[in-house]
Image (cartoon, rainbow, N blue to C red; front, side):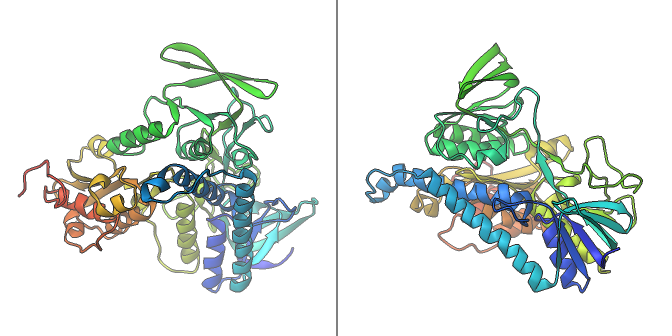
Length: 479
């Protein structure tokens, strides 16, 4: 038996590394196990988010957006940039550098906080035991009073489109293209599909998105989803709803995809195909036989509201448990669990977790949609404000989109906020804070917002809930 710890965390993604740092800050002897091998052949921290997810995709989204701005928008501002070109390989190198800086930063944070980094594959072999097998197959067993499983998730593969290196790829492969494909197919019009489709569309690809569902972004408020679809279509994304992929065939350097829609059987040819149909928990082999930790039929670890598993002292957080597969959700669960292990009272408000799609404009939301409220039998009142009426949006050349506030008709408590517009991902924090403190729409309406800012759209939307918006004509009668 090797060293004994107060806490061992399996996985150093945004859930795991945060849990480990927080536990160490609480005075607990903590270790964190990670097996991810980076491009240089060494174990790296950060999980999917830092290595092949949130961070690298945002680096590409930001670079490609600036490229489009320089091509089409600078002239409106009086900036003559001439012919602008994109060096895709240089863009990818910058992305890799950002990833390396951040993953290396976690190693530094572990050292600064006294977290022991264990390299290898972690497996819970008992209620207080973790087996760690390194890349050479050498195994060591560690003892811990508490274990936190933060194993994350992996992309879902579908039988009709088996991955083929360089041609049919998942989201990870789509971050490694070294040149812009002429014809790009994306299966799945979810967050990942729309973001990756946007990157390559901006860089010149003819992008077709095939989505099996008939509704576009069903998790987003209907009005916001409709406007987002319109804006993305205007940018050149060809989004085909109700298109169920039935098969594919690689012919030389091309991929022929077969799908069915309302018109019948269809066929389309691409140079590259990205499969973005969702993610599944990575729990296979993480829990040993006979440990007693319960998993559901989809592989998610069963936990209670405070992330306790069915085995005392064993917790699970992040993508491998219920709830949205979001890095910040995993991080907050990591903090909650570490605090609980340290003997503090802690809980998490799952009703106030924000979501963001980093297209341009961004789409962000928190809480209920109007459709959610209707299904729950809750009567609501809403207010919306278009960025077209915002002075700062005009100055920014970013007048597309709107902010929308949803409040309980009886109590005025904010139930949800939805935004499509520039910096929506930053502005949605106002809705998160408001909901966390049980604020009313009136609370936001009575707050003083800086002028001129994009956030004033949220202020005006809150005022519009009662028909009191100042900078647009109100649809409802003032009280």
